[in-house]
Image (tube, rainbow, N blue to C red; front, side, top):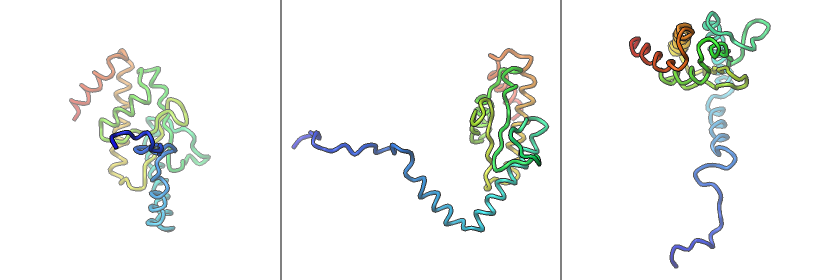
Length: 167
């Protein structure tokens, strides 16, 4: 018989689904079933509350794009960090990488607006974690203000040394 497999039919992708993850729908369905109507409503309320809390806490330091007429947002918000490119040669990707260094999942970058960060706090994060995230972004802003006076190529070295002294 040997190792000739030429007569076998190609079954397509094995390790990856050609049209995305096949587990997306069962996971979403299971989450909805486990939460139930009251749980989903509560999770939505908490996610919206968390996003508005963070946006409000950061408003002195970062501009939030696309607020409603009352100044509120939905379950996510977009921080405009484009000005840092001009003042400190820092882009959204640089901020996202530093957030990962602090143990945070990187926010969505440059979508739906180029040069921005979309923050989506979930209903499962407690206030301590929300504050830690906000504190990290505020700390970064203060470092970026210092970077206005430094050449952009020294960015990573400066931040690494500065952060190492702070921790």
